[in-house]
Image 1 (cartoon, rainbow, N blue to C red):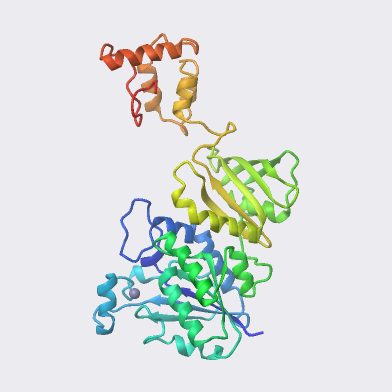
Image 2 (cartoon, helix red, strand yellow; image 1 turned 90 degrees about the vertical axis):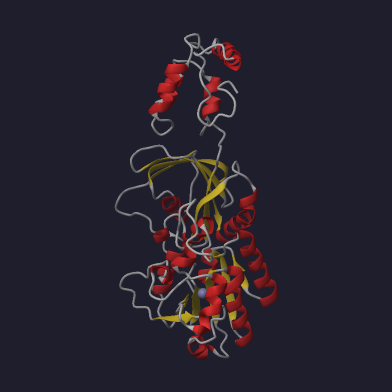
Length: 421
Ligand SMILES: [Zn+2]
């Protein structure tokens, strides 16, 4: 069986380097905070791209060949002038922006090929055709990963399909990205429909397409530290792979407790979590869904298609991982029911009582001392029992509206009207 081929496309700092949520884009071609985070993960050294590169570099050349295509521009080259004029300066040779956004594993003996791309077409003025010569006429599997999905990834797939019709081309939705999530998924649909490219939602499926055994991309699970300590409540029995996925998804936790919200019998399980970080601080609650890799990958890709239009109260994907034939998604909820979390407004309205509210405000993870001091200073003495509190607040609100009392609590920071609303 001929070796498979993995081609990365423009995985460089100027395109994908992680940036802050409100940071300005470093150039016009950067894919932005959200997509960079989706592509590289919250921790790029442990994210999807890094893990696939670790796997790829561990494969012998007889199994997998690796080609990195990078934009590599010279501002004084007249052949590149129109490209740089169109998109602005980016990936100028030798600069930090032109560096790869991933690290190859130290000591890797993998022979990788780097192709310097000068324009939108990776074959014009480059060595790519020469490096692909051994694959002419061969039924080789080629995987593409990188950015932008609707531009250089699509253009490359088109060229490969047109020049080497025997190649079998695959793309993973989690390993490609664009400046627009919508354009990313539209491009994936077009790749599949017009060019016959196989689209894989799960990273493990993509790796298996390239010859990986069992889709086994390594998970950086802390081994010697003893964390996270995992407790499964309710007698739910998890497979070994499922427990490893939980260890990975909660690798920044000292302790994590899970209770079954659904499933547990047919291989799918939905777990609610309570966890503490490495310093013992409570972490926000999550919901973790574990199941067959293909099904979980499909759910994640489908969710990502609509995530941007769901609003702030909808869940967000915090992390995901594949291991062997299993997959897991870690959802973060803006508001969780079932006693996991509450809001300041709910606590204030339900327990506006000096005996309970200060304790609720005492935890530094929930509120700072500023809130506690504000509450003690501004809460009227009559608000000393739960029964008296609502009436006292109504009185205070009425007085404050008329400007009659300076003892009424001011609107807390962020409140639109008053403390009683
Ligand atoms: Zn360029």
